[in-house]
Figure (tube, one colour):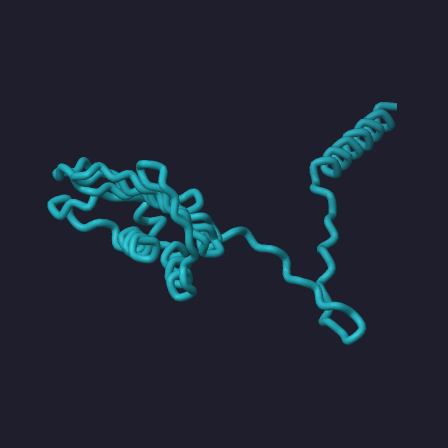
Length: 168
């Protein structure tokens, strides 16, 4: 009798373990079908959309300070349309020329810009200097244009100079 009850316990134990394993396994997933090459009778399928890149992000530059106390904001949309709003609220609009838009896209997609954003900020030694704050998507960086503070971040400075020249 004892061996029969032990066999029953073993069977119950094995069944419990196996059923527990089955519930902790992830469900079998069938991979999505691969797209077939387009044939003359079938339309081509578009590639899957990718995550937005920095080059497809809105760029916002805020320039403040200086002797006259400027406060300008330049906003550039991913398609190159720009708006400048000054401290008094005056607004100007335009569109970046193709070469400037291409250069801007290359600069904001450069990994150096994100690395510059990670630099710690230090207090400035200058009075009446321009302060620049550059935001590209979720990346934010900036600097004070003060020669005694050391050099500004190269990529951010290139973007600032491009935007001020192109929208000025």
